[in-house]
Amino acid sequence: MTVTHAVATAITFLWLGMVVAISFVEAPLKFRAPGITIPLGLGIGRLVFRALNAVEAVSAIVLVVCAIAGGWLGQAAGILAIVALVLLVVQLVAIRPALNRRSDAVLAAGDADGPRSRVHLFYVAAELIKVGVLVATGVLLLVA
Image (cartoon, rainbow, N blue to C red; front, side):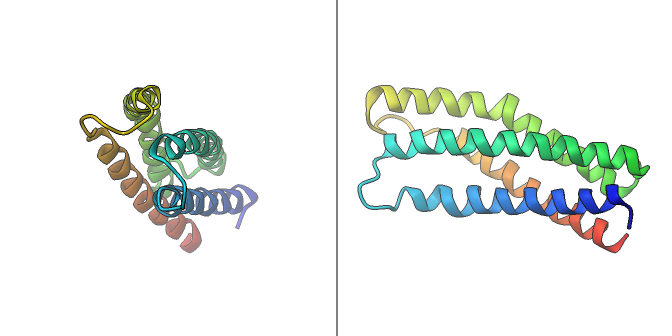
């Protein structure tokens, strides 16, 4: 196993673990904590997801650089690395701005009254797909 291959494998599973821990464990649990209001939970969530997305962006770049440097960009794991990067870009450019507008409105009003946003469901769907892509990428890197 080359250094780039080892780094790519580690980054893939680190990225996967962070997404699962934050998106599917921390985010839903935070709203069940005693004393956490919707506005407070949204404020915390914005900070946490901003940090997660920054780490994800670095992880995606490192993964693609490893694929290029390792010469496996055109192979299945490299293609999946690009798919993970594209999913992250879609989340950051197309979905997050709409989520931020909704959370801005909730934070300005001080409560969660008003129509529910379905944009959150698109973000969750993208996260689920990204998790699947990262699992597949990691497995392919492990068996290569």
